[in-house]
Image (tube, rainbow, N blue to C red):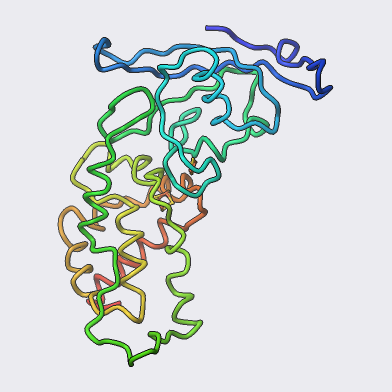
Length: 255
Ligand code: SF4
Ligand code: FES
C-alpha cells in the first residue's frame, strides 16, 4: 500500500500550470472467474482538485487496468448507476469531488453492500428492483380525465410528495441500511420512497394497496430509524422522514 503525504501529493503539471495531485486509491477488486475472495488493489493516480472519483476510476481503467469494472452512464448525478462505497460511505462516484476527500490518506473504493457482488464495483441490482416493482411505483387511477384535460392537482397537493419524486434509484440508501444488509427480506428505503411518491399523490387511487403491502413483515416496520439512508442519498431526499410518513399513513389506514 502506498501512503501519500502532503508533500508527495502536490506537484505542478508543466503543460497547464494547474496543480495536480498524486492520489492513492485502494479498490476492492473481485473477478468471479479467478478469485475466491475479493482483494484490495492500490493505484496511484494523478488528478486535479476538480476531478471526481469517477474520473480516477476512468484513469485507472483507461491507463492502468482495462479489466476494472464499474457502472456509470451520465457522469452527472442523474442516472444513478455509479453508487459505491467511498471511504466507507455510500456515494455517487460522479458527484464525489477529490477536493472534498482527505487525499493525504488512501481513498478506499468498494461495491455497495447488501446486494450480490458480480465483479469489482458491480453488484446484481435485481433484488433492489424487485422490491421497487413490488410497491407498484406508477399512477393507478380509477377514473379517466375529461377528454383533452389533465388531471388537475393543486400546488399544495403536489408539494406533499415533491421530495420523493427526486429519486434516481441509485440504491445508495437501501445498501447503506443495516437492516437490509442483515435481513435480505426488507423492502428497503428506496422502495418505500417510491411508494411514498404515489401514496401521497392526490391523483392516485391505490394508496390503500401500497399501504397494505408495506404493512407486511418485510415492510416499513423493519426500519430502525438509523438515518443512514438520509445521509447517503445523493439527491438530498429526506428518506427517513418519508419512511416515517408512510408508517403514520399505515397506522391511519389511509394517506
Ligand atoms: S432515495 Fe436517494 S439514495 Fe435512495 S435510491 Fe433514491 S436517490 Fe438513491
Ligand atoms: S454516472 Fe449517472 S449518476 Fe453517476
